Image (tube, rainbow, N blue to C red; front, top):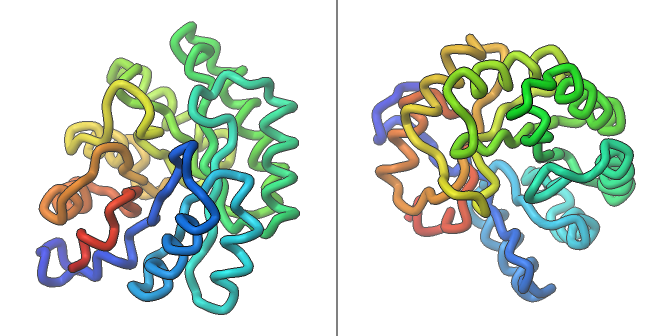
Length: 219
């Protein structure tokens, strides 16, 4: 697939996202209807809505992603495991977990790896995306986080929760893509509001786009 905007099926990159705490059942149903209509890659919803989204999207080809350890990453590994197991039971296809950011900042990379690895095991073969909250990390920590994700066996590095101090940037995506070397998917998320922005992030190396405004991006 070419990198030019006219060559890209942007919908196929989009995780149509609604993680606001005030989201209602009707909001989730609308999100799912939009995702099915536009053939988005996935929806991303909070854990309490996984079963609803999975039921609504059955047979549509749209995957259901949910979040674990969200948005701080500071829950116990055992709790992240239970969250992941519940998500699997409720028919989630993908898990977007938050890395233990404090452990990363302290250089406790073995603990970071074990936290991710436990979720990967609990996901039972489903795609695991690890949110590293790039706005809180140095470039060296971003690189180390990518290596930890690879070691732990997850499939994606994701830039941001959307609830942190900053979102996806082209520079961060380029850095993560360089370190990953094609061994990880790169999900750019956080503050992506325009089609032009999404296309620039894809050109920088993003293989998935997390956004709450997916419909306006593909119109």
